Image (cartoon, rainbow, N blue to C red; front, side, top):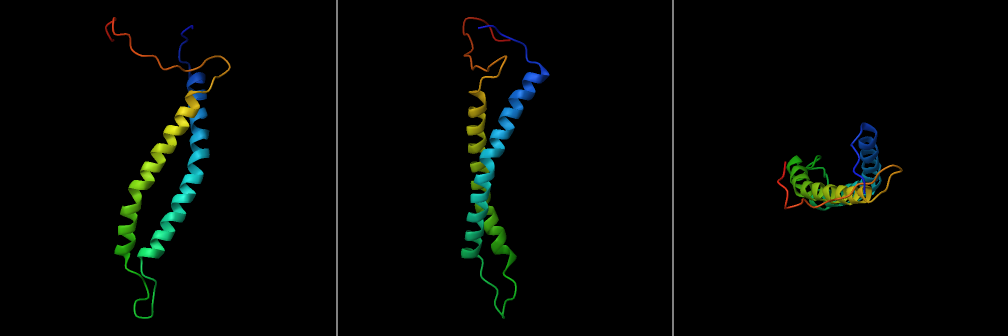
Length: 108
């Protein structure tokens, strides 16, 4: 195995490989989260009536604060999957490989 330098083109290939995979995986996840958020909003936020024409904004904020951590978690997990997918790819002139640090030589 020959070690090669990191050029701008190679860095761009790795970035692009990750970016389109992440976008491909995140779109369906975000659609599901939007639908879930909408259903939760309907379930929690009271519907408008003649007595109260607009639902309370605090219900919306509470729902947003409850759903936000799940959105962040789903996005992080999806990006980790996309990164693993991209790192397992072989390009035409190189591939990435995870190598453990050799304990016998001092780290620089």
